[in-house]
Length: 141
Image (cartoon, rainbow, N blue to C red; front, side, top):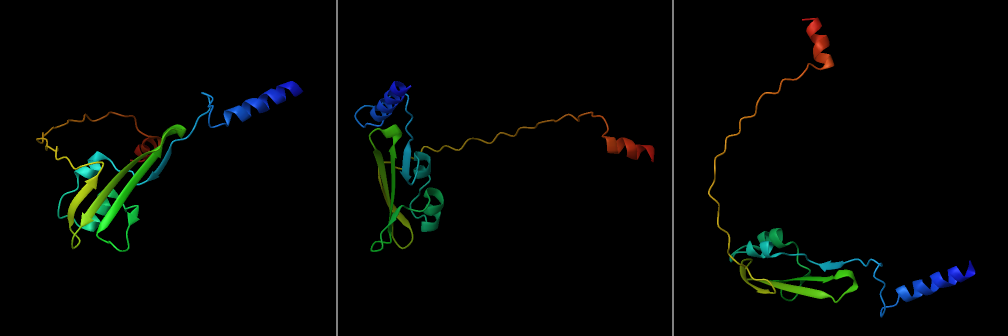
C-alpha cells in the first residue's frame, strides 16, 4: 500500500512539471481582453460615433487619458498551456467621429444584401381533443 502511495506521489509531481506534461491532464484555455471578430470589424464605417463603435465592438480595454480619441482593443489567448497569441486593434476618432482603424484585422466590405423572397406558409388547423375543462364546460352549455 505504501509503495502505491509513493508511486502516485511521484507521478503527480512529474505531471505538475512544466518540462514534462502528461497527455491526460486537461489544461484550460485562458482568454483575456476584448473578444472581437472579423464580422464586428466589417461593421465599422467612417463617421460612426463613439457610441456606435462601442455598441459594435464593446468597451475598449485601454482608453488613454491623454488621448481620448484613441481606443485600443487587445485580445490574448493561451490555448491549453501552449504559446500565448495576441491580437491588437486600434480605433481613432476625430470630434466623436470614426476616422481610422488599424491592427490585425481590417474592415472588408463583402456584404451583399440578399434579395427578399416572399414566402407564404399555410399552417393547417390541428384537430385536437377537448381539454378536461372544455369537456366539463360543454356539459353546461
